[in-house]
Length: 360
View 1 (cartoon, rainbow, N blue to C red):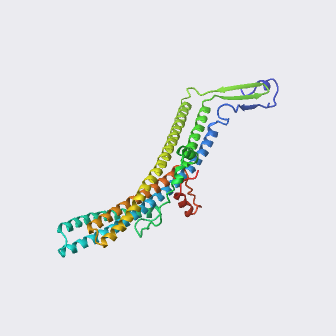
View 2 (cartoon, rainbow, N blue to C red):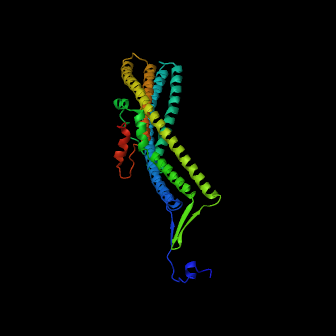
View 3 (cartoon, rainbow, N blue to C red):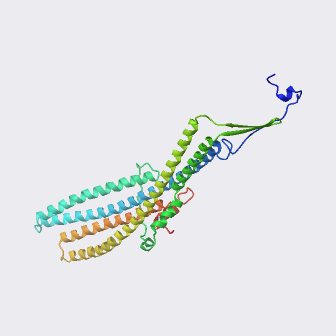
């Protein structure tokens, strides 16, 4: 009978025990089995996604802060333009009065009117930029950008020249590589691809089975012929791992560049601010003196108006340097991964982060 083993044919009718073992160090059953590595890769992928979302939140908060600083700058510049336009209107009215009384040249009135026309365009552009930015700020604050628009108030961050001199770009960059959530996300993605490579390599191994019964021990070694499927899986896993490593290296280089550029931007903004702040202080004195001299009849109305225009120009440029400092400061915090944007963190704490230079 084909179903009777040799022992039973000799009169032994009792079933004999047997043991079939698979060696766990070969394909499919070790720590690097496709199932085990796929599970670890999945966990790493989930963790990477969490860090990616955290960086997305940090980026959104930083973008909203940048919009606020830009709106604050445009608002201040609009106020300067509005005040200068008012002075230009008063100047034209004064010149028109002189001409009507026969005390001025019509050419002077034409010149003043042309200057006012330019001021009208400047003021209209400044008003449009202010309204557009406030609309953008409303959207950033979860509004619809249609109803009553928020009005940016407050001051720019205080410029800290002493703290800026202590900024070490290389040290900050290395610190950023350890703190950035997007760096962590890509690192975990790279580790997940490495797990897939280990699983794919395990799939290339032969499978060894051990059969033990009273008649002896049987070893069975099996290997797929051709192994085209396994080889394709391994090639795909290696390609994914290589691409992940390249992306990680590129991001690390980008982070170093961002930190370096923002540190340089902070220093440039401070240099520009120092020069313009001194100029604005001097022009403020000049403008006050010009007003007194005009009232005393020493300066002409045109000379007084020229001083007013120069002072408004310096004020506008000073606001721009303050925005330059604030925007580079916000970008530096994001580049360093130094943005605490957790939902449980109070708004006051979040905004305070963007008002001072990093301390590490």
